[in-house]
Amino acid sequence: MSESPDSQLLAGRHAVVTGGAGGIGRAIAERLGGLGARVSIMGRNQDRLAAAAEDMGAAAIPCDVTSEAAVEKAFAEAAERSGQVAILVNNAGAVQSAPFTKVSLEQFTAMIEVNLVGAFLCCRAVLPGMVEAGEGRIVCVASTAGLKGYPYVAGYCAAKHGVIGLTRALALEVALKGVTVNAVCPGYTDTDLVAGAIDNIRAKTGRSREDVLGDLIKDNPQGRLIEPGEVASTVAWLCAPASAAITGQAIAVAGGEVM
Ligand code: NAD
Image (cartoon, rainbow, N blue to C red; front, side, top):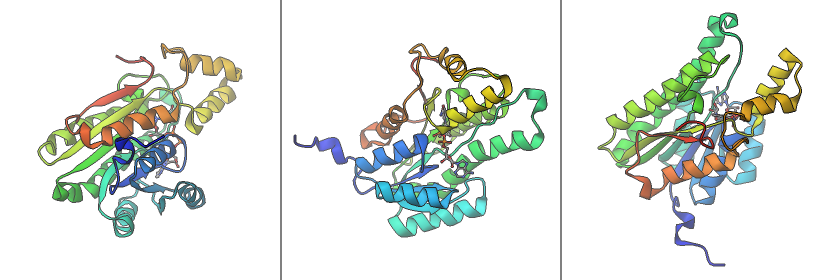
């Protein structure tokens, strides 16, 4: 079968995906690479990062997105190795759950740091180059927790609402510069993050896996977990040259959970 003309629509573009070694980030990195982009994945665990990068033919750049110095260094290295960053996917993130009054300041701040400050630092690192080039795509992997509340994850919800605010504000600031800034908002997605959340709830409540999973998917009208590849498809679409008019959006990939 001959390839469609769109099959290499990101050819020549350098894409950075944070937290790209596993889960949703890995699916995004593979998809962008499949569309012809030169991909760099960033993350904290060097061995895991190197193994994933080798599998997908990407560059592995160690980076803790909560560290200003590490982010500056990592993006300088990425640009040196693979050229000007044309696509940034802020995917790195983490969730911790606990009843509100049991959350320490340190735990709350950690949610803001990894989910929101990390996105801010990475955007700031790539923006001057994108503006100078007159084109760029930034996609933040937020969450339905950026569009609605969930109990026991106040810090995560606050951070993801913040990511959507950052997305909207930055989209306006660079609207005339050829750079689009959007967020995708997955519902519960089949990754280690959700597996960890299920284990955590089971440890605290003694409930069965099926029972806990049933609770997580009951708000999704499609009654299922989202697949990482479904999130990757939406990110890839936002990164396409033809998506230039789409900016400042927070697009739910959640089976109709929010509308
Ligand atoms: P995951 O735990 O598999 O992936 C998160 C990635 O972020 C990991 O690779 C991790 O190493 C990396 N990371 C965490 N802290 C980091 C740091 N300080 N610096 C660099 N990298 C760091 O989980 P996932 O489900 O694939 O999550 C990816 C993104 O999707 C996250 O932002 C998450 O909040 C969001 N999300 C996930 C779900 C879900 O149900 N799985 C739903 C909505 C949104």
